Length: 165
Figure 1 (spheres, rainbow, N blue to C red):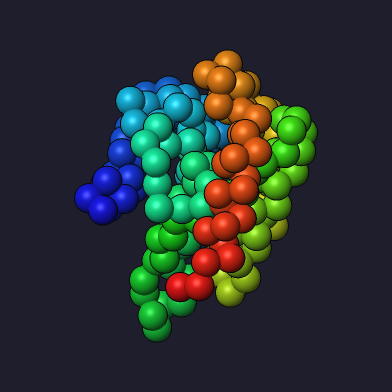
Figure 2: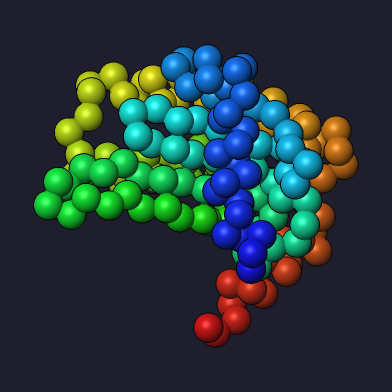
């Protein structure tokens, strides 16, 4: 439980390195951390997304997770929203997994900007080189022997989705 609470801090720590400070302006940051096999991080105009693969088992149905923080848009209710979501990227190829991850991140972007007035080019800037960043992250996971996830992983995720809460 404590690890789940510390996750946003650890991922935010990825943003504290000089290399990633430059990445905040124009690129996704791709790298690793002692607690994560691989992560890709983007922080732009109040939108924060980190897609990562935790080394330790999680309570989520998939070990591939997305941390998000939405910007404050409504001045009457000045609060941002932090969320953790599992990404069910069980595809056999990097391209299959990319499609699932991109749809998940696109869903976050659409939801986060729905009630905000944003710059016309924010979506283009946010997703600039997204595919390249994901494929680099995926390659790190393939190299580590993690992707593609086994059929056992996808079956376990399917069972956890079917389990009543």
